[in-house]
Image (tube, rainbow, N blue to C red; front, side, top):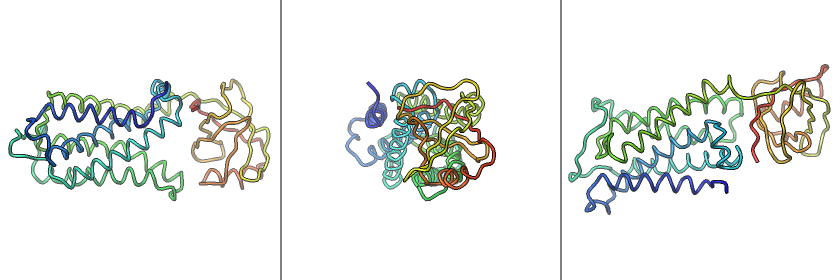
Amino acid sequence: MALKSWQVIGSVVLITSITVLMQISSETWITSATVSLIMGASALACMASSCILASRWHGIERLFGGLDRVYEAHKWIAIWALIFAVYHFVFKAKLDAWDLAPILELSKYWTRLMRQLSLVALGLIILLALNRKIPYGNWRWLHKFSGPLFLIVILHWLSFESPITLTSPAGIWLALLCSVGVIAALYKMILYPFIAKAGEYKLVAISQGKAAVHLEFEPVRKGFQFKAGQFSFISLKEGEFPSYFTVKQALAIKPFGNFGTYTQEGLPTFNKVPRADVLDELGD
């Protein structure tokens, strides 16, 4: 049974809520400050989980039943992270009854700056990711800044006065998630391009359909096993960047975005047989 987006989001929020409530007096549970504290911690936990889902680790893809479903969960958990962060930003997450202290001591200026930047950073990440009007080539590079911006959110948590200590259940939970999230982001940005499985294919047939260009490739050496309905990342030698497309008996590419327009207008004019790198990232 594959994991669903709501199951991941619900589990992250539930664990975060329980561990936060364990850290404060039960007399203060039903307050806006407690809800704000839980929302802030949940936003951080969701953002860390979103980084983990974007890592392309095959074990995660198997849990969800394919990379396309991982992307769906990645999108929704990031959206909920922004919703939680907005509530946390609006309502004060402090009470006099709590024993408040920062994990990382910073000056008031830097503490306040981290608070402001954390919401701006999270908002930029989500809004840029959801903006379909940005050309894919530009969007792809902008989205790479999600990892560094995540560090700003972590700094806000560490420098913010709260009842959560690093050795408390909530502190351990958040530290673990954030550590794995940072590792996942570094892996995706630095290591993944060098270790991802890829094969070289040559284009053997092009046909113009009513709504898409149909491309048929055959492997130059060794190919991948796939099923119709899955998708893979394609990077044409004459192109600029990899994009993912659904695989049927051949590739069907609609004229959307940079890559789609490129295949519509550019491929039919090639005087030589185009070649492409196909990444072994197939979702169900």
